[in-house]
Amino acid sequence: MGGSVPVRCPSCGSGHTFTASVYPCVCGAPVAPPLAVGVPAEPVTRRTWDDAWVTVRCDACGTACAQPRPELGCPCGTVLLIPVRSAPAAEAAEPTGRPGPRDAPEQDRAPERPAHIPLPRTAASPRPAFRPLTIRTSHDAVTAAGLYLRWLGFKSVVQADERPESGIDLRGPDVIAQVDPTMSPASVRSVECLWLNGLNASAVSVYFSLAGYADDARARADDLGLPLFVMDLSGSPKPVNGPADELVSAGA
Image (cartoon, rainbow, N blue to C red; front, side):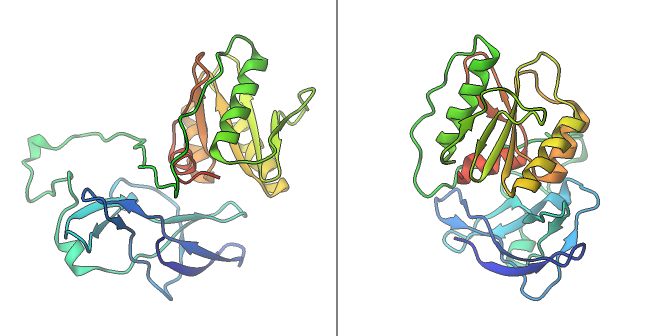
């Protein structure tokens, strides 16, 4: 378990306790970014690749590796950047697998980087393999999503007898989910409506889609910290953004 620090949202004044996520080093030892105590968190207003990562040195083997920079989503909708304490030894070394500008020739540097990088699983106890349900109808899609939410660890997930106007297909004590079985990418409006419903219900919002998501919908979901999954006809959901990766990694 990583260290914890108190965090206050500058937008709404709400207080939170943030615990750093732990990721495995190449040697297998758990590593977490060193959180800075007493430094105010700042809202995320824009994202760049370099700002999304922090370099951390493993105490066990000394390897420097890149980890996602800690962030916290406040219920008011503000995404907060959690300050990380400077670690001279880690800062002096480049992250494993990511050569720095002094080490890599200009022509060898990739001009573009992937927008989505799967995170390693860090759940305390590994779950058994998910057993998918083949999707033949829209009802099958909702059923498969419900099975997946239970596999993630959400309890008492139930399906609505008739789909309500809100579009919420699945509900549990701490989760709501929308399942889009159409052949059109989910829109940014659908993502925002689901997030608002989750905010009102004090529950985690999860979106499943067979046709994927519009670019602006994915970007908005990232800003809101809303997990997005795509489903194929085999009934196997796949995470397509960071919040979804984190949910699969840590579980409910």
